[in-house]
Length: 451
Image (cartoon, rainbow, N blue to C red; front, top):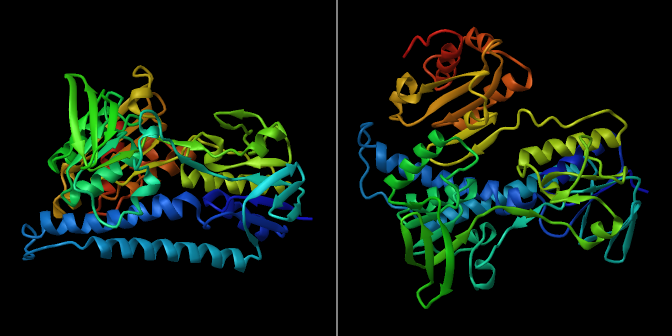
């Protein structure tokens, strides 16, 4: 009998398996496709590999002359970009497989069916388990009218393309839509974004969205906000789309349509038959237990915060509880990162969700930072939200180069209940982009020196 059988080898599943094995438990990890799940194979890793290529291309084409580097006839090769992407994905998979082997996790290839709270079936093999962890992930949502039209792309399909489209319409201006718009527009593919909400990146503050929209429009991306595609028809050239905008209905013909309106939990009929409680996704407590105490659920299948790093930590929490330790998930300091250009990263509360009477908010512009000037960057800021009386840090948003790395200062501050004075009194290295965080903290405490 296994101490745990884990279904799904994505970020949550493989991390839970390794943590359990490190603690001396006998573990089986069942995966019907590739280890690494969506993140490694059709999400985070391949997207960032492609964006690394386009970021370098943009740096060369936009900055080289100003920085005294003479480069002529700069070209890109999409097939080489894709080879780089595939190589990175393969290396990531092999890295996970190595770790599973190193920690003696039994990896079983196949589709799992939960027969009972202590029995999992894979083909003709029955796996007895003291505990079961469901980590089956999610799949891209395909909503009407797109679900009835052939050859519409989801985020999973983009990575299969052999050549760049001549033009593309992206339905949904959230994280996935903006990242793909950044990629395609940098390579001069005409891009149209249609976003239902008031602005793109609707989970972020409006000032964040405005900077990213400005950057995309500079690359000739057409953005329709408070708009929706009401009809789409396949044509010989691609797709004819009717877009209902604030100004009226317009028609747009493009070669490809990419629907990026979110993801849905992947929940099998076997899970439903067990009587596991489902509310959008599988419902759990903070220990990651379902209403059946020895069955846990982690990651996207819960239908809550669908981020790889959240799934990983949920996997750790589930593993600790299976081992008899008391561990609880804390979602108060979950970072959100967007690999747009410039990058966006946030943690804690946003300005739009804060009570103005109870907080102090200060933004320090990237243009006032010495390091930013050396790398020819001006667009962006660091915004800090703190309690008015105690100056305890409640939220941080960063827009600019390396924002996705710098946000960790905000994560640590919020997780540990630090106040702005404690960070302001921490010496930040000069000249670095992290001094923009210092400037924002100075603005919360008293007055910023460099503004």
